[in-house]
Structures are given as structure tokens and as C-alpha cells.
Image (cartoon, rainbow, N blue to C red; front, side, top):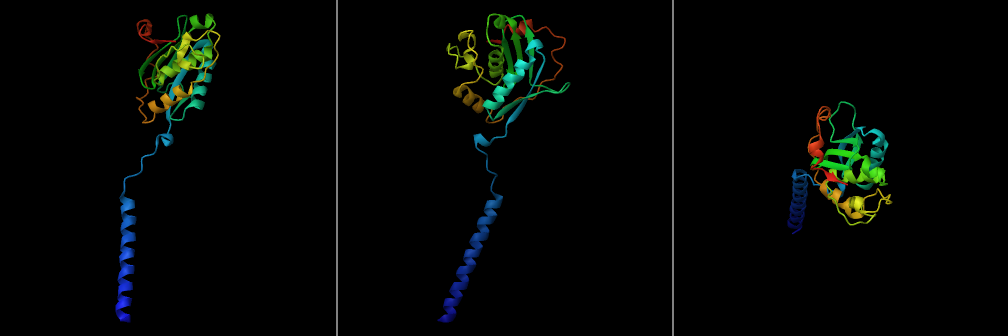
Length: 201
């Protein structure tokens, strides 16, 4: 009797040990866990503001605003001669952006809107919003960054709204960013025709 009970205990212990080993092997062979959206590594976009004339510091401030507002994408200054995602210009027209793909494109800091009293930092943040995948949203509300010039010229708000921030986070939650453009593509080209198809502020 005692021998049979002892044997059953030994067999039971062996079964439990084998089950634990099997579970550990299965866990080791399992596919790696996909991180949730809020843990996706931030994508870095490089921008060149060297052609933005008097608006260089304004562009830097606008980029910092976006960096402090979202986590899935960050904007960094490009080093000279290196590939860039975003090139910023200054001209005497109306501010506008021309996205070429999500996270890539061109921005014109137009002096016309500034001369009419619109805030330069709000303009730059608005145009960067287009590059980050946001459309114009002409609500007329100062609290909406993408309302652009439909808000009064006295509006100084350069911060994206919670809805705008959430949309950019969704846009970049899967890292859908095209390769950087060549930094020298714009040096000898006339962009007048391209500007006609761009997003106006």
C-alpha cells in the first residue's frame, strides 16, 4: 500500500514538472509581443529651415510645439548636406504647404499673411500640421490650429487641439513615413507651379 502511494506521488510530481517545462518552452517560442500604440517608438522627421529667411527661429519654435504635443513623431533639425523630410522656404505669397507623402513635403512661410497680422508661429505650426497629415479645418476657432486663417488675425494660438494631436498620433502609430528626400532637390528649380497645388493656410 505504502509503495503504491509513493509511486503515485512520484508520477504526479513528474507530470507537474513536465507541464511546467512545456509551458516555458512554449513561452520562449511565442512571437514577440507587438507594443501598443502608446509605446511605438517615435519616428524622427528631419527639417531644413535654412531657406526660411527671417522665419528660421519661428520654424524651430513650431517644431518644438509639435514635439511637446505628440509622441509618435518628432521633428529634428537636419544637418547640412544630409537627407531631409521637410524643407521650409520664405516668400512674399500666402503661407502654404505641399505634402509629398506622410511626413514629407515643402512649406512656404508667406509674408502676405504675416503682413496682415497673422501670427508667424501659428502659421508655421499650421503648415507643419499639413506635413503631419492634417487637413485644413476652417472652423473659425482660434483653439483649432488647422482652422488657419479662418480664425481672426488676432489669434496667437500655435498649439494643436486635443483632436489634432490625437489624429497625428494615429497617423504615425504604425510608423508610416516615407524615406527622406534628398536635401539638394530644390536648389535650382522653380516651384511656382507646385505652389499652386499646395495647402494654403
